[in-house]
Image 1 (cartoon, rainbow, N blue to C red):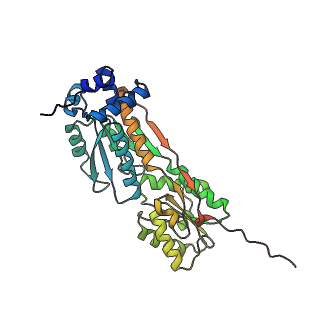
Image 2: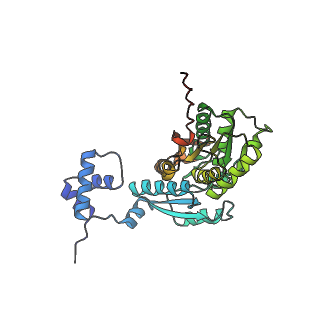
Image 3: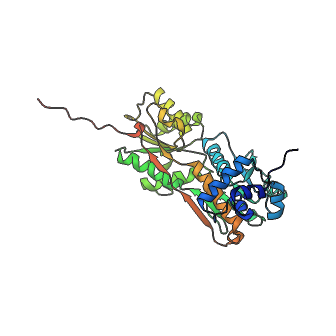
Length: 351
């Protein structure tokens, strides 16, 4: 029978204590980098695999994070979950993923109870929040036995949040179009109930100086549903009610693709007749014709930060019950490509 490699075997080979090996395996910081790398190499060489069940019993932890998500068909959601899984794996944690079928899924209590029964060490809630909704989620989460990080919502007392600054992204996109000399800038939004969508709209409004109840706003705005088809339909509707629009901020890149199709069918040249800026910076954005200017949001970084934050709360549970909200922000950037660059007209030479 083959001898099962133990912690003591690794420690003996490395010439260190079993406590030091345990620190490396459990990602504790108080080990020098040289020692850490040497122990990791010996772990790999000997084929040591920690007894997860025994470790869980000793530590009172399962080394599992609960993840509640929605909408894997969207670029942002899938990229976010990849960032969460990658960071969790790096830190020695597995993930237990639950997907909601709809935003108004009535199973919230059932889901939280299931995660409690699975003894997860923490939860990351990635379901899109509704703008100005009654904060039922925060109230329920405050009563859980494990720490919770919520992504992308308005802050409520006691929340631990990780947010992308969508409003700043909306300002970046709109200000860029103004700087390029476009005069009348419309917007194709996501679903009006989504917090992320409405934050991007607020950034657009603030940059254009539009009052909250400005009657002219509706002529410059059409709601989409994040899909390419809705982007095509929205641009047709937008130009039908405001033919003099010369630029559009489209609130995600998938809708931008549909907007390109509509513009082509209408004989509108991009960017000469219509400047376009998207949001997301999907991998295909640089291959649009012309390449799409877009707001870059690193959803993988957002997911990794959420894991880092929930790990901090697991290590120090007192931080989980603070009365004030605790918000960490990811700041987007603008990637400028040809779809928004207005070519300057050359002056005719006089002979």
